[in-house]
Length: 210
Image (cartoon, rainbow, N blue to C red):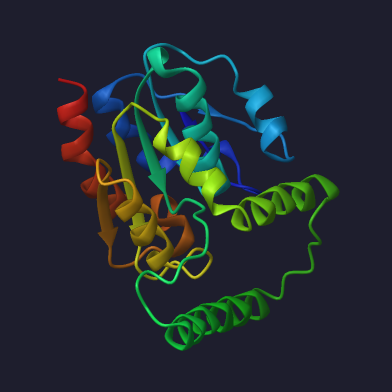
């Protein structure tokens, strides 16, 4: 079961669908816009047993679903997921410089796209729920720690929305997770680098579905 990120669509999974289909039936949910409570309600019924794949904000959704329905979830794949901000063992100055560099690249990308689309109220609520979770990292890690299914975290090194250091720091908090860092793909690696993304997931999925 594949869940797209905020402001995205189920079509995001088209490029990796055939690869994922080697491991079972693939379902891509079209999620409504809204905060995490809205998404939880929309995704409450899952095919069982399910492997949940969550992108960005939906990574949190996948973890929450796995926490509340442990018997129906075989595994969780987080792809360029949201993670709480973290210094990842670095000093404050180094962290600030790194995060500032990511924000600068992201701002340049937005200007280059010259996007005139304003976020909807539902999208704003979704971003607000992530911001609140970012301010309460222990709430995120409490949910993550309650997940009993295997977790694979795939993150692109050049993700400027959620820096890879946030993902690596979270993974250290949860040593049972498997982590795969791919060199390029940005925040939507499964869309922009489908072959690299599938290569990062293939062995883990194969072992899980044997």
